[in-house]
Amino acid sequence: MSELETLQKWIDESSNIVFFGGAGVSTESGIPDFRSVDGLYNQKYDYPPETILSHTFYRRNTEEFYRFYRDKMLCTTAKPNKAHLKLAELEKAGKLKAVVTQNIDGLHQAAGSKEVMELHGSVLRNYCENCGAFYDVNYIIESEGVPKCEKCGGSIKPDVVLYEEGLDMGTMDKSIRYISKADILIIGGTSLAVYPAAGLIDYYRGNKLVLINKSATPMDHRADLLIQGSIGEILGSIRV
Image (cartoon, rainbow, N blue to C red):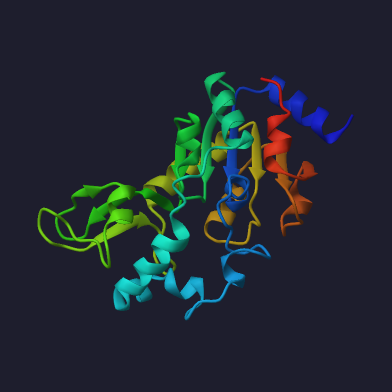
């Protein structure tokens, strides 16, 4: 039996699947990945992206942060790809219980997924640091310099987890609960190199760990089913 046939069989037999995904799920929608060869880390800026996207840099150089953030982090024209759409279909069919994602683009929800744990937040949500007023992504795009709150004049910060910031514990706890109870855990489009998110794999207790990625990861030896290739093509071929 081929890897794809095995995956299809497992999905057919399960109604408790959890998907855990990273940047590779979004790159197929045209959103740049940080760590790939042509990703943001290999482009030239006055500071490395990892520095710009840190809490310290945000506090000290907020205007410079926003210049980079608007230019490189907001891809509002991106559309869900075959992976996003298939996961939403699996959830609707009662097979997939949750999506746990490291991505911040909202594409899972755009595809129709309802139960999405966003470990690193979302560019679609922004809040005034002073009064907590909510602002959508278009407000950030259309503003200049550091976006200011129309109600109190405070600075607006994206609801995105920056380097040096902790993950939201409520989101982590919920993700752990779903993963620990899953029959099948499908991990896709992630290098499994970013902690604490990558550590979530340790909470899976089942024997159907599926790893789908274009390149090797440090966790390949732990997979019960390893498929190398495009996450969109592979999930897109699944019949629901």
